[in-house]
Length: 296
Image (tube, rainbow, N blue to C red; front, top):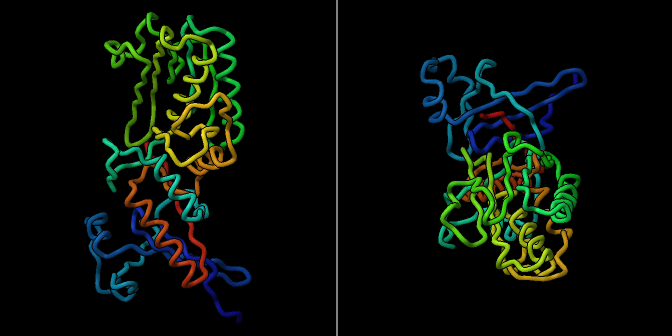
């Protein structure tokens, strides 16, 4: 008989689940564990018995409980996406938009779960609409799980672009005369966005289109522009008439919408995930996976 051997270690860090999986020629056995203190909180209606204690596992000074089939989490298992420290440093500055520029480990990333459906007010010229949608479609094609389209009806939209002097589509922006925007999110999922442009100060179609693309990039994740990149990058906090979607720009967007990271988590949890993932791979050579569970 061929001995069972571990082939992969799976960790769902945000829920403190630990998984181990074994295989032989015709059998795959998966065991899932949870920290004892977390189990007692989550499954208080299913108290542990003396028999259960025989299935405890001890790791890093924690007692882990073997989960029953009924308690096993459901979801899609995907490999965790590794990135080097330089990339992660850039990504953290962009994706974790801290209030008042003061780093807060509780700050969370934001993302669109649903498709982005853009409505333009009648004042926006065909040329400008075409320019932005060409830009948006480039991103749409390059980034998985991010879908962007134009809609003709306000009721069908979740993304509105209009000019000062138009109908005030977003009440939060009514009192502001400058170009500005407003982003709505729930449980760190973006579900509505509006941008109002003051074309009296943007005195050419080129500047209007430039500002529209800048707002668009930021709206894809409540992103912050940074000083680390050359001005040609759309994530660079500086003006350039030669802006383009750089390789790194697209890599950041792909990463943000990748299933290889946990969406909507805090900076603290994000850093902890990478720390644990790298340490585990270094020490054991085991791969790390995540389970994505659908939430409202």
